[in-house]
Image (cartoon, rainbow, N blue to C red; front, top):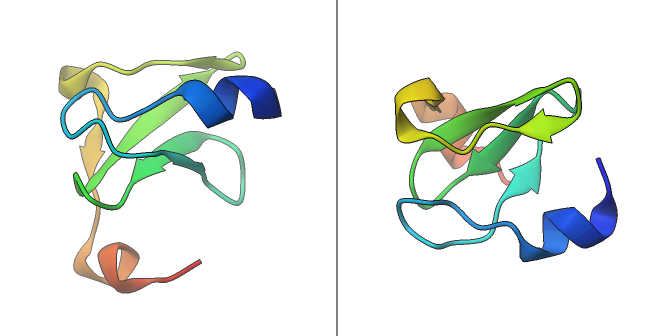
Length: 62
């Protein structure tokens, strides 16, 4: 994912910064507790498409 794009994207629910998952398939909102999919390099920032982070994922500081 383009780093410049990642710097301006925010969680649509909390407006908090997003981080790219290690495998590059999701944008993570720790504050919102959600993971938004990245499909074909395009972030899908719809709350209905996001999955809820597990308790372990929420506590992980990576």
